[in-house]
Amino acid sequence: MQETTLDHNYCAEFVSDIHLSRAVLDGVHRKEIQQIEDLSEFIAKHSTLLWPLNCLNYRFKNNLLLTKALCHKSFVHEFDLFELSDNERLEFLGDSILGMLISSLLFEGYQDLSEGELSKFRSSLVNGQNLASWASFMGLGQCILLGKGELNSGGESKEALLADVFEAVLAAIYLDGGLEGAKNSLESLFSIYKKETNRELISASYLQAFDSKSRLQELTIKLFGKLPKYEITQLENGLYSAQLMVDGTALSMSVANSKKKAQMELASKVLEEKLLDKYCKENSHVD
Image (cartoon, rainbow, N blue to C red; front, side):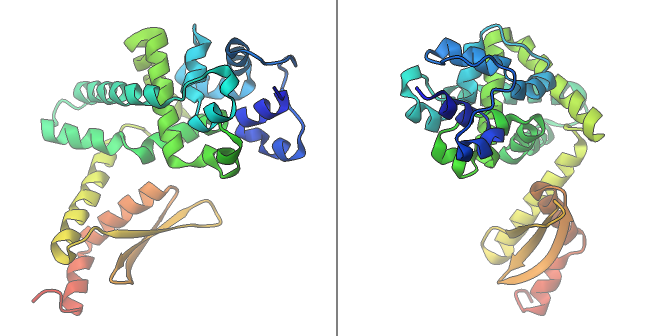
């Protein structure tokens, strides 16, 4: 096979090298990669994995599990000589493991919350946007094994792919090191995230914001018979603006450092200032 193609599809950081048709092996000895064992060895030793694995504080005993966790179906289709399976089954397992671990952490850390509040709290944490942001923080997008088409379309930054690979890697850790290994890895990620950003990954603020979005959703359905519509714009300075649209009119706007945070802050603002009530009165939606 063409080693250069494999190298470039492995690391999103090598996108420019794909177009230049040259390989950067970053200290890994150049050799022909013909078998799945060679591929797994290449991946396990690659510098791109250092930060993600440091965040998780984990080293795989079975590198093949890590390879499978990083393997998107587009890569499987293009490199069928490895007889790989994609990471979708691991993603399925990881979803359950993550839900259980988060439930355990919330149960132990928030003993004053009721069952309903715990369920809402878990839902506010375990969702695609959050998982994608965790994966981005770890640099997992740069590690996904992608086919050319998916890589050229920016697959390494797609929210769904990032969330999927996070769950798949957690499942791989579970299969390699047991439930305790998966729990320790998750706690390590939370700890490093706090150290690097000075923010908690598990915080009651998520529950409050989640409740705001839920209540706004209920209110818009009651008033207009449809879900709230958020229009998101990425600003030049790396921030995101969110606008709440009602009948084509921008009701209010919020700016934050992530799409999700902008939506949550906007929902809280609309509810606190009773902007929907004011809009309805001004436009005769209510008596």
